[in-house]
Image 1 (tube, rainbow, N blue to C red):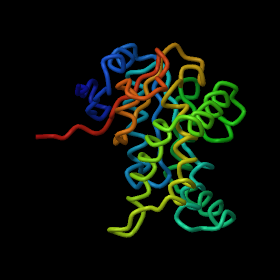
Image 2 (cartoon, rainbow, N blue to C red; image 1 turned 180 degrees about the horizontal axis):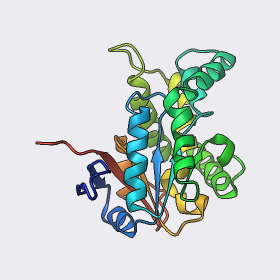
Image 3 (cartoon, one colour; image 1 turned 90 degrees about the horizontal axis):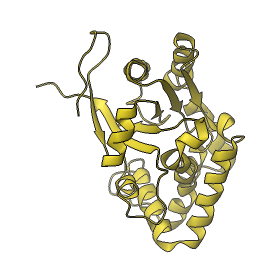
Amino acid sequence: MTTDQGDGSTAVMAVTPLSGRCAEVVERAEHACFGISPFNSYFSTARIRELAAWGLDRFERVDFFVPDAPSAFTFEALGYAPAMAAWKRADRASTPATRSSPRWVRSAWPTRTSALGWAELEGNAAFGRLHASGLRRYADDQGFRDACREATGWVLAEKLPAGQVPDEEQVEHAVRYFLAELPLFLDTPAIVGAGTSVFCYHQPPAVLRRLYGGELTWRPAAGQGFAVVAPAVRD
């Protein structure tokens, strides 16, 4: 579905839920969680403010998930030593967009939005439970492990030189990034204390279509949805 311009102050967004249940969660309009990648130039300051304005025009609450600390796993997979990977992660996480935009959003709507980084999530009981469960499932469930590794390979391939394919060791390093994100795809309502929540991102990997399509052994919570949200293409 495509949103209308409304009062003229909010961008027009194309919204595509990944399933019928996801569409129901979008219609509930209770809580939205926007994924913000510190690696992706798509998330400029202007884009984040645009998403915030759009989301808060339609949802009761909006949070921004910024996977800051786990991004070091991707740098390790690309060949950086752990100390350098942590430095690179901190450098990327402190870009103007990822540093200032969530703070601007919180100051503009202090009671209706917040930023979810690793500092906020690692002490969250529901997140910890889901993360630990994901690690166990990754170790014990071959089908689930293959799906996680496929998603990780897709992400890594975009960061390697053209034609280069990530090897097994690289994927095994980087998959920890995906496993750290996974709780937000499975049960954001439990993490943030909402009845329902829709995770919003502009380009989901194929594994999320399988997850929300019920093709994996782990299923999202009843109140969890996912929608592809991006600026609508004008004719």
